[in-house]
Structure formats: structure tokens, C-alpha cells
Image 1: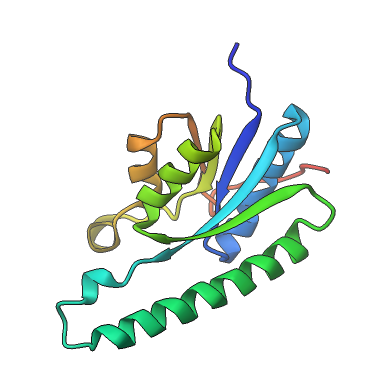
Image 2: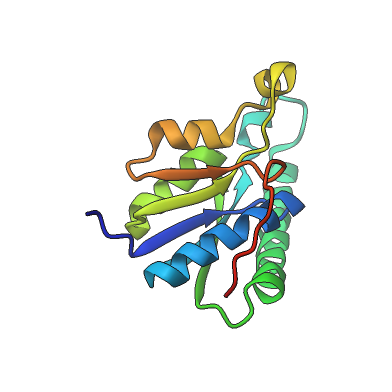
Length: 155
């Protein structure tokens, strides 16, 4: 039987994330696993070919990182008060960074939400969860936050 000692929970700070979070905390508590919460700031380098000065992109990325760190602190304080957690803010391609953090931290499980995008929206925006599932070296539990019937987990 595989042991789960480290659980990675990627968040985007949306209401959808807060609906999925109880699954991660429940599993972490029941399995006595370490919980790591990560947020990835999308790298803006892919927009460098547009007419935007490079220095403006650098400044914007720095501001986004600072803002994301503050948001992470308030997210942990609001939703994980008293729960032992490691929080990280990274920058890069979101699915790639999630997988990279899972590997760096030795995650045994990734618990993440899926937005359930379909059609053109999925084609245009892609699916972070799908890309993580396809490339992660550990199991990935995906939860559609809009399909949860009841979430009666207790901590």
C-alpha cells in the first residue's frame, strides 16, 4: 500500500478552491500528511513579443508576485487557521510549476479542483488539471467544485 505523507494543494484563490480545500485538509489530517498549498503566478514572458516594454512586464511580474504572496497569507489565515501548512508562491507556466513543486517537495498526492470547462472555453484556456494529471509523477485527485453534493468533512 502506498503511503501518502505529503499532499500538494494548488489554489487559484477562487471560491472553487475553497470548495475543494476541505478534501485536501481532510486527507492530510486522516493520513497525518503534510499539506503544501501552492499558487502559481502565470509568467508574462509569453507576451514579450507584443508591444509592451520589457521593463513594464518585469515590474508587473514583481507586483503580481508581491500581491500573490499577500493573498496567500490571507488565504492561509482565513481557511487554514490552526492547520499546519506550508505555503508557496511560484512563477511560471501553471501546470508545469505545479508538477515541479510536487516533485521538489516529494508530494505523494495532488488534490486540485477542476473548473469543468468545455468547448471553446477549454480550447482557449486549456485545462490546468488535465495537464497536471497527464504529467505528474504522483496520483492526482481532481474535484469539480460545482458538482459537490455535500461536503461534510470535519477537522
